[in-house]
Image 1 (tube, rainbow, N blue to C red):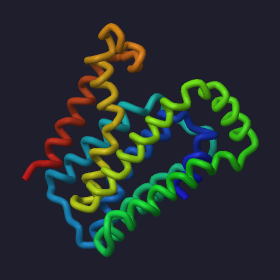
Image 2 (cartoon, helix red, strand yellow; image 1 turned 180 degrees about the vertical axis):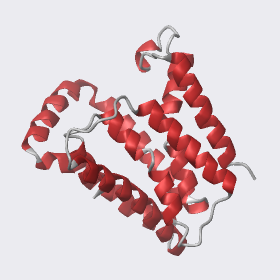
Image 3 (cartoon, helix red, strand yellow; image 1 turned 45 degrees about the horizontal axis):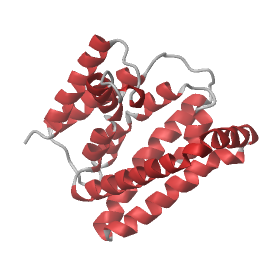
Length: 219
């Protein structure tokens, strides 16, 4: 459901803006876990808020939507992300790790195939596939890393609060920025990282995110 809403919203929103909205879902997870008896400290709430604000600012490039329906698609995307995390947490409480990992990965695969239902996306898929075919082995390794990342996320949700795990997972753009900042100018590695612009602005936002992460781990 979340993936379906994501692709529908993507028709009206830029990817950066859409993922910015999605970065707020750990806040929703935190709210939804209260009735389940999973509480957070004041420091952890503040940390989640700082990280969410930082990631949204880091990703958001404009502040307008092109469709009235986009709001509901984005809302479905965010709610779907939050509910999937809660379901994984509850399954891990009742069953074992693989009982949660299997359906979670299956849902990601099905969601990733949803765009093929639309003719325009199907044409784009085959166009891109023919372009990357010579480097298909590289994408295979990337997908393997994605599977390992999902497994780590599910395992982390099993031993920690789902809102905290999702908050840490949402900091990916800040991590990419830090890696690009430190390694992007090294000869031989520059092609692996995006060009960094607005360095001071992004450094400030990344600092806010790091402070938020510090508050999350504060005992």
